[in-house]
Length: 269
Length: 154
Ligand SMILES: [Zn+2]
Image (cartoon, rainbow over all chains, first blue to last red; front, side):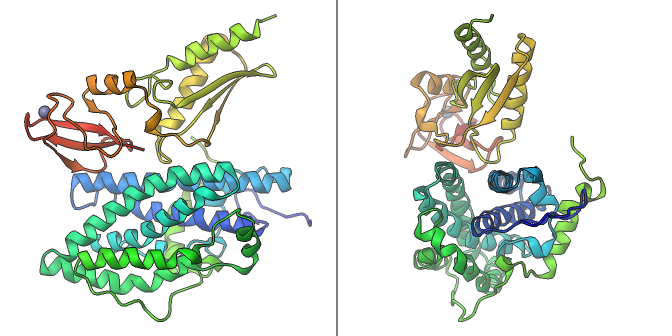
């Protein structure tokens, strides 16, 4: 392997194996959505909801930390001199190096948009981590067990709100419908599979998300029916996040998330 | 020459007596957070498991263990996180559940709504799914009108 030149505090150059790309994709989903939820802190519609959103964000941050630590273990095993830590992945990559699905970087919008976005993510993540109980690495399987329990709460919370808003006042319904119409095209990216990950899936190391799409659509359809929202799956979907092609929103988010460690490399407290 | 078994037992006694930062009435051993204490190549190695992914108390517990063991004279201490098997409320003992209840926190019972920890009533309603800490939700008793925390099933 050629020597990688990294500037202290600058971007890291991740040697992306198919496994590492998988870890980073799911870690980045959790980190970016967790950060979005943290933006609600002190601005939620009620005190209870403020605490709920902060707790949801903390769960996701904790899940991201586990996965980034796992990425560090993988990279350090291949190249111990790198001395990677979880923070390197969160703070020392630029937008094109992030692998998150575009859904999670979408701005919070109003409360309805945040809840619809969370329903679209959590319904997927619940199915995905539950299926991942069967993966071959016991550490990943145990992580999936914990994450699934947490995300099941997320899904219930988001679905309750989507139902309440959709089947609520004319204004809450208009906002929920508008959020759903705007975000639905981002859902299918969650089910994309990368060709070079197929051997890992065949070996039982990771789960192919594509096989969960029917169950996912069924769940979303059930929630939307209870919310009396009209749902039409788009024929095309937004794509590119898993390959590092992001919208303009991610750069702004990272500017806030990464400012301190970029300005003061190696800062700790 | 330190007796290894004694050192390990002493370290376990110290670590297992540490209170949980968020529910100080219970120890980290009672909550199933403390997994093992071993003497490995001269280092007292304490294994803990995180409860919720986002529980900020995990870092604090790690620090508490290191401080307590160093104060007791153990110079080489390592605390590591163990993820498998995942933490669950299913392993909490009956005595621990009763301690929670006595603290005013309705203990977890899988598949069941909590009972009021103050008056025992089953007429209760949830106020918020996310309470004062990640592991708790906030409820209210309809019979005695008191609000209470519920330790969620996990
Ligand atoms: Zn009562």
